[in-house]
Length: 83
Image (cartoon, rainbow, N blue to C red; front, side, top):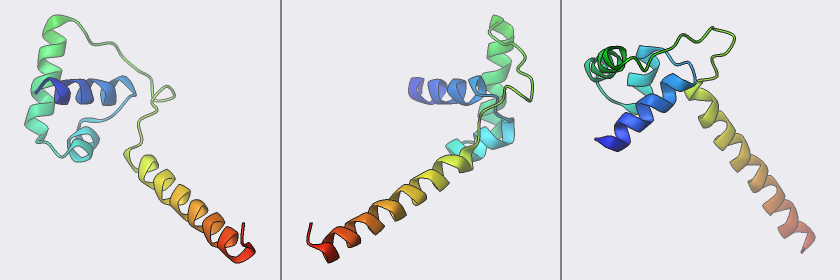
């Protein structure tokens, strides 16, 4: 449970939307709303402008796929060259 709280907080620290966090972490939106309510009650919330928002759940998937393709390319190239 503590790990999930930290994951949620990290997403919101980067400027995520509620729906994006729920979908990215595969949890219910109700749990995300509970986290927000608790954070508001404790005074842990600050506004982040849209220009400061860095959260992009799809960016990580794209980078991983591109890195795999590049590694595969160089691996095949080394095999063909005998390096």
